[in-house]
Length: 286
Image: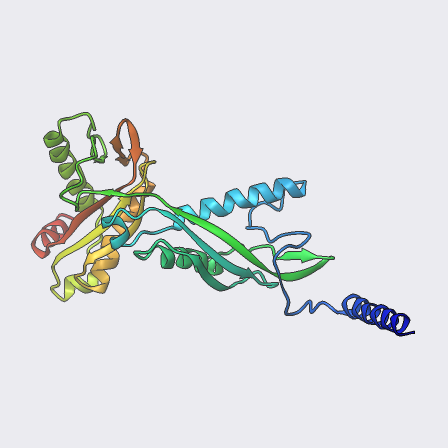
């Protein structure tokens, strides 16, 4: 009698548990999913036919965005920091990016740099396609690894590993180191002088001096992670950043640094000069 009653209680309990689980409702408004029928997709791939094509394209577009907007802190460059940062964030139903978290960091500002580039996606014209489950848009947690490669630099007096320094314009990287530096300095000086826009506000106020700018010359010759190291004034700083950024619009540009015949990322600094006397002379020729 006791055994029968005990077994009956167990059956009733399991039945209630089954009913409780099967009847539990999904909160489509607030629940955060990790795996859904259609995962969120980075924009630019919705014109493709199959779901797999869209997914593969989305991942590629996402990584292109990350590495074209990624920046390095001065600490990360000087300390040769390299490795993988892992970021998690929620792709909301309205395509916005929220709750950005660092789940793995390698230090020296790399974690925050990865957060910043993910946060910048909220400013894109084209937005993420949200995740879908059972035909409904849902909130999805997304995990993103961001790799940081080692950056070489001439600020480190002990860094003698670079065989060929990056050179600008028509300079030949196979020149002797001394000749390469001379050619590079001349070409770069001429480019900056011809393309720097002296801010009217600074000119009228008699502001002159030097803005020191740091930037990475990437393996493909493009310029990234442009930073002000020594500031002069807000308007002069912006003008200095703009003239360095404009190098990415050139048909020619930088020949990257090389180690063992392999191109490498290289951190470079340049003093952008704002000279009132030279500017007055330039304006008088117009």
